[in-house]
Image 1: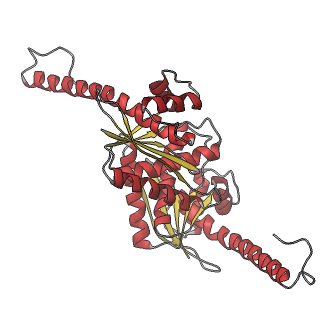
Image 2 (image 1 turned 90 degrees about the vertical axis):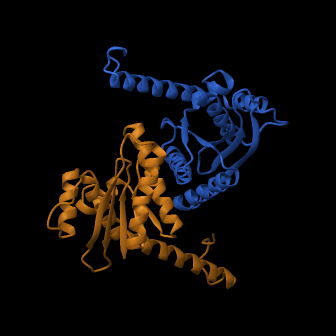
Image 3 (image 1 turned 135 degrees about the vertical axis):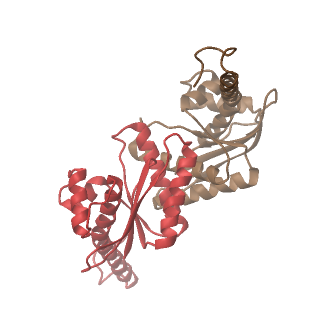
Length: 190
Length: 190
């Protein structure tokens, strides 16, 4: 599975692509940071972010895009710009029919370091170690994008198992209902 | 001038197009609301919003798009979705090289009703009166989108006059500098 992790932002938008799967050592494919000048008009900045991530999507063809899910605890202006950048990335994925997953910063930190409150330095160190990189990815947005991709790689099988199990249970209920319900589990109809 | 006003949102995104200009009675061209189901995945919803506004842009070719500039005082989840919807609308305009203007809710309310704290009912009543509509636009998102367009129509000439004046002053300073500065105004160089 190829995952594109996105640390969304207007000034710097991190985009990290990794390959991995069950029992495989995750491997860095590419990491880059799309930058847009602070003085530029907002809609032009969004266009530049979209163009940057679309190039990555079309060239490296990820199977899934993992984007940071934000909260608005921080500076209002920054959060709005970040949300808008995340929105145009999600749109680019939707246009290409690539599934999108959202992970919170604490999910990402917990996935790569075991600690949901880990600091940037710790996250960067773990990303470097987990991907066996010769040196730490720079700037922090690049490391964060790779951490998001790693987080997705590990959470996805679990999320998928849950989805498959739910699907099976629904099928079982439908089969039981179709059979008249006598042999089916009681009170499980949707 | 043709203005497309956007009241951004995922559940309902209002899009109102009006024609107007100096000394002209503003005229409704079209108003509609793009809706996306709450149960749908976020990136699919953003795609539907983008598709809806892009259709309006390509069919009615506005000269400018006026979008509500939000603050995150409200429900975090709603604000994020709204910001992302606003982002994909701004991106659609940027792709078509249409200028984008942002107005806050209080600027819009003040522009159409004279009161920056006007309620929705008052805004709807004023939009209906100002555009001489036979009945009030419905739902509120439609009225808000038209209010944004009206707000832009009235604020734009003022903003433009300021921009032109600043430009002239800069030219004057450059001319004075080129002429040796003796005849130019003192201390005005950039």
